[in-house]
Length: 155
Image (tube, rainbow, N blue to C red):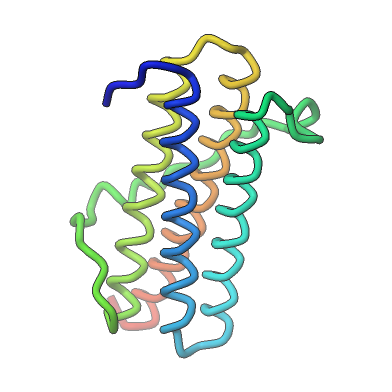
């Protein structure tokens, strides 16, 4: 991917976060279990926070709390390594939705890892590192949901 300016990078990341937010809103509407529906809505809210964070960064404003953000190692159970890349289809089975969501979070994590080395501004790098951690948290949560679901199904 070619980016000519830091704003090109930010615009791309903002677009990806908006796409992720819409994805989680769409699947929350299809989910029949209220607990799962709320989890997907919560993911959409998180993605929306990322949009706001990136838009502020593009405007030259560093969001509050960034200086105090605590970086932690997020365990990678590597479930996504075993999953196929699939496309979203309305009415997908819950297992497939989880697989798709896991792969999307894996790609988002990779994106922010890649973008942080393409930008020089230390504030931008810190935001991208923070977003790496946030996407890793989402991925772990979804992988755990997937494991729990598969255990319930006897797999």
